[in-house]
View 1: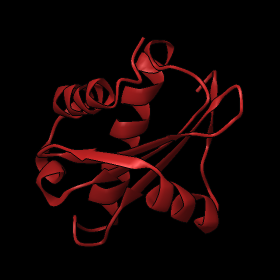
View 2 (view 1 turned 180 degrees about the vertical axis):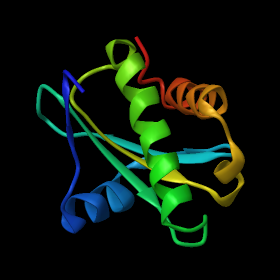
View 3 (view 1 turned 135 degrees about the vertical axis):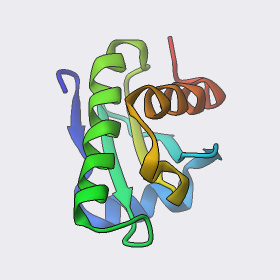
View 4 (view 1 turned 90 degrees about the vertical axis):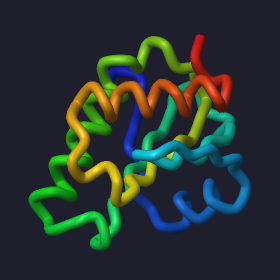
Length: 111
């Protein structure tokens, strides 16, 4: 991720959950808010309800790769948290990418 960092601390996730706006579709939920920095920070959350560790890590990699390849389309200065839903465990790359871009469009954070 060229223009972004990872969101790692629990307090940062909590802040985005409390202050950010959320939209959801069948595969993902996305929270977004401005962060006052010049770069985006991306956090990904996949619950144990989604599946075992292999499935969870695969879904995390699909979300991260979808964001990385479309990163230039996103506005900067955002904290973004993406949460995978149970329906996403059988989703392929194209499904995850279209779900991510759909939510970004709803948030109006796509250039």
